[in-house]
Every structure is written in C-alpha cells, then in structure tokens.
Length: 251
Ligand code: FES
Image (tube, rainbow, N blue to C red; front, side, top):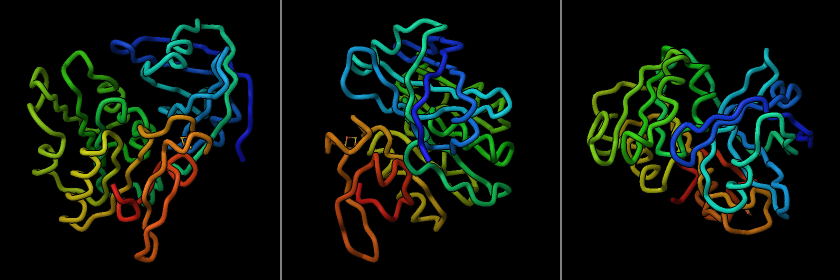
C-alpha cells in the first residue's frame, strides 16, 4: 500500500559532515510507515529515485524523518534542497523490522550510516533497549541523543578510539544480556553480529539497506543470496528486504 506524494521539507540539519537530517510533512506516510522501511525520493534532474531509510515516524505531527549521507550526485542534489522545498516521495517501501514483544531486552547495533534505520524501532523498546553504535571517529557520531531520548542506554564505539570504546561494536555486546538483536551497517559488522546471535541462540534481524542503489528492482546491484528451507536462491535487498532474519541471508 505504497503511494506517491508531494511532501514539504519542514526542517533540514547537517548532523555530521555530509550527513543530513530532513523532517518532511507526510501525514499519510507517517500513519502507514513501519520501522525499518524506506522511501524513494525523486531527485530533480535525475531519472531514478534515491532509496532513503526512514529514521523516524511521528504520527501525531504527521511527519517522517530521513537521515542520509551524501554518496553521489543524487544525494548531493537532495542535500542541497532548502526548507520549504517540495519532495516527491514514494513510500513506505520494503519489509521493515518485526518488533514482536517489546518487553524483551533488545540491542540495536548500528554502524555508520546504518544507524538511522534503527532509531524508530528502538522507540518501541524504550528502556528495554541498548543501542550500540559504531563510527569511524567522534566527528562521525550521529543520533546518540536521539536513542537516549527514546529511553535507550547508548554505547559508542569508534574505530580510532576518539570516543567511547576503541574497537568494534561487537566487543560492546560481550557483557550485555539480550533476547533480540537488530542490526544495520557494513557487511563485516552484520556477519559479526549474526555470529553473536548464533552463539547466544537469540533472534536477530539485519537490515541490508546499505546495499541498495536504485531501490526498485532495476539496477540488480542489490542482489543477495537468500536461504529458505535449506535452499539458496537469489533475491533483491530492495524487494525482499531490506530487513531479514539473519538465518535467511548468506552474507
Ligand atoms: Fe537496484 Fe535493488 S537496489 S535492484
């Protein structure tokens, strides 16, 4: 039940170098969107829309929040739009997180620009959740306060040790107790998180959203190996995901 709508850009901020935060007026999408889904935003002058993950849904205010990184010409044009501009948005798309019982202890594990797709889901778990967020360095840290505002405990890891734990996000999981993991970030991180889930025997949902280019099944750039009933088959992150149970994906 996706739709296309013209949405007004209400607020724009730059959270870190080349990472932008848009709040758009979109009451219908806000009513329908699930955590972990994405939107397709038309870029003026470009043929293909850009897939951008939904970072926040405010049903009362009727707004959606998108936090994205400039990765090429299309996202650069988007980032250059000013408040008051109209965005042509196709949403909500893809399969998001299946939250289940939110009284369980959840850990949200995000790496870099894989952090924004986790924020909305963390809201449902509130104080039952810990967010373990990894970044290159302190200047790249985003959304730390937003996870806290959702009630979550936050742990930061950086590659260079300039903030929080010096090392991998998975190091920060060692002394934590949890029933379910939600993860989004680079493939090596998702592999490591999946291994932890397997070892602990807990549920784990991973979002492969970083690997989408066109988002509509046109570029084939998001092909992924999926597993069902012990058989491997080729799927598309943009259509079959972006969120999968870790057991169903060959990373
Ligand atoms: Fe292009 Fe899926 S992102 S086919």
